[in-house]
Length: 207
Image (cartoon, rainbow, N blue to C red; front, side, top):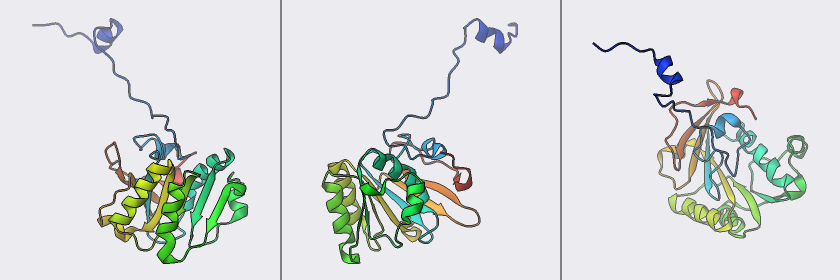
């Protein structure tokens, strides 16, 4: 009968390989939230791609997710464009979060032109990020935004009602915000990695 050898002895003698957990990759486009970056395959927003953020209603904290990114980009003197937001941004609040408003432009487009304006801004190559709230956007329209983001090397964020969750989407990343019974964030699709089984509590997000 073979003798029982403690595992610690084998480890000390280096007869058993000890694996190490992989660290969170340092993404080129960190979200500014460590807990979220830890869930995403690229360690942040997918580079030059479309991210779709699904909401139960406008104004449930969706801008809180992107403000650290907007602050980082504008501090680097890179342009950010906001297309037809449902509410006017609180300039004082954004500045308090570190956003340099000199590098933020707001495009006031009628609904039928929102997708067109968003696509043009993304394709221009002059925008680091473009945010939009399209009310009507099918798979074809979203694919055009994904291609435009890749062409212009920009981050594209579209905020949509979560009723669209059951529809297929070409977005590289899909996030769903829940407000009740507690604020939390689900990763519903992430290019290049498995979808996490559990949500992230928005109350526990730490920058």
